[in-house]
Image (cartoon, rainbow over the protein chains, first blue to last red):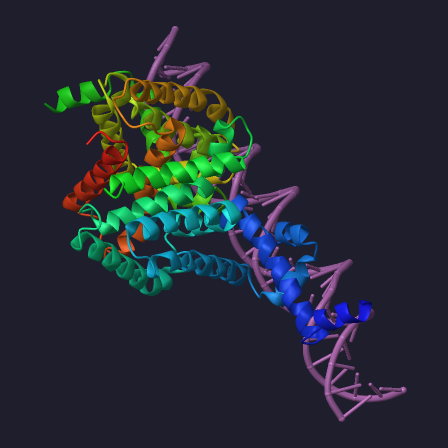
Length: 215
Length: 215
DNA sequence: AATTATGTTGACCGGATGGTCAGGTTGTGG
DNA sequence: CCACAACCTGACCATCCGGTCAACATAATT
């Protein structure tokens, strides 16, 4: 049994395993620290402490603070984009937009740090991922706008500006991650419960879906 | 004429005038730098350069970086709260909520830096204005929730969770300031025109008001 | 005009931070 | 078992930043 566990854990050699594990630990710690302190306020020492590694070890895996930050932001961007899958094979706005709201609310709950890093990056003028905004995100947005516009043309929903509708969806859902502290404070200092997350998601879905005339 | 201008400008003595003017210049510069670089990334030297004053002069008016930051955040909070006036003497949700959306969208356009500073502060756990969140903001929120709940009870709008509706309004409107860079990039690198701001405001109002069943 | 209060600023300081490096340890292939 | 490569880390360094201060300039007061 011990041997089996070892074998399965060491599939690709101890060396690459060490590397993968350490990079993961560092990236997780970095995401949290960057989210809580901002890029300028974060220090390599803080990240190292949170990761449980000496600072010099961080520089072994990531040459500079900026390189580490860049990797954190890229990872988040991937998650962000994949939430759009619900759009693709949806027969209409109820499933497509409703599902998108659910997916993004789930991300806000599961990856609050990542969301904050992303927000911070954009607020500071996207120094690191400007190229992504101009290519990947622009294409992505154009695609979803076309889908929404098609629904409008087919009479499946009220005529609403697809671009601003998308912005509304982003804003609402990410708000629960980015302003989580404010929401928590207004909730008596307690994190939202399962039921409260469900209420939030349901309220958002109801108001939006009724707002685009599909309820 | 020259004399008149001077007289009106120096109403309260040269000294207090100098102080007021310098504090204003410094606060404006600080707001911009804090918004663009974050608290940790901002430096007193950067703020001084933007204000056109030597760094030591900043410390004459504001003892520490934190004190300067604190004042910037307080100023924003004031503006933020006053946008709620439209709620108070509105006969119903159409005027109250519609007007609130318009007011907050106007603020996002006029005070984008302030909005970003506020967002940053909250995202980092509100180290400076936690007490405000727990007192002023909590009371404010409770008051508006009561107003909305009353409208629901009177049958003036669909039954919607007032708290999450408020969060939606905050999120949508502030998104246009906080994520302004992303929106600008997706707009071909150009800031939103007057017409586009009108579209954004109208879309938000339409979807929300229809979403709460008053259209 | 003399004195005092307020505003101005270049030069400086202690501490923190990102990053380096030499010397060590551990895993890997032959 | 040996030699090489990958990994680890304490100690160190140059730089930058918030903040201080002493000396000076300007306005207000008497």
